[in-house]
Amino acid sequence: MPQNVLELKDVWKVYKMDDVEVPALRGISLKVKKGEFVAVIGASGSGKSTALNMIGALDAPTRGSVLLDGINITSLKESELARIRGKKIGFVFQTFNLYPTLDVFDNIALPMRIHEFGKKAIDEKVRELARLVGLGHRVNHRPPQLSGGERQRVAVARALSTDPSMVLADEPTGNLDTKTSREIMELLRELHVNGGKTIVLVTHELDLAEHAERIIELRDGKIIIDRKKRRTGAGR
Image (cartoon, rainbow, N blue to C red; front, side, top):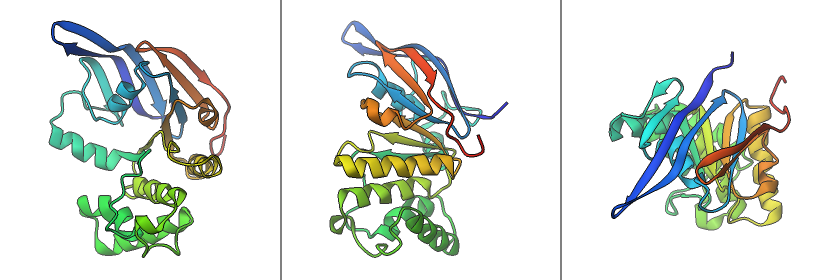
């Protein structure tokens, strides 16, 4: 059996507004295996954003368990969660979240410096990743000097810098035009097919979800669809 990178077990999230309880997630359970490309979709209010917070260890469930690489993170302290997030999850956000005063090299290197990688390892890894995303010639440029697509490529490279178990892409093409969106999705698919990376894409756009091999749809805090679309992974 392939190893599960992520597992949610009967996860509920209930928010309290005054005396009213509002359930955002209603007992969802799912497993993501190593090397899968999964798209999580749903309309506004479906629980998609809350599920993202659970998957990314950004929030704790009201009840149920979340496991990353077999580790139950549900009751961990924030300092422990931050360490696990940094090493096991690479985040790609809609708004890029790059530091405008740092050049491409330093933006990619930042997670490695936080986790105390050696200088030589950082230099080699950053240059390798910059070439991988097609920006080997732009490492000395700052984000304001880059196009939107180039900024998102930097964000993808940064997400890969600590060699995480899973890349979580949150609406990664929301600020990009159609052509650039297609290029970013092809880059993610390439990382999946040829790089063997586990990718969880959270999106409201069905055409983007079609790049994944498995689609999970949420409605009213429940999983209503969980289907395999096609087998696209390396060696499959």
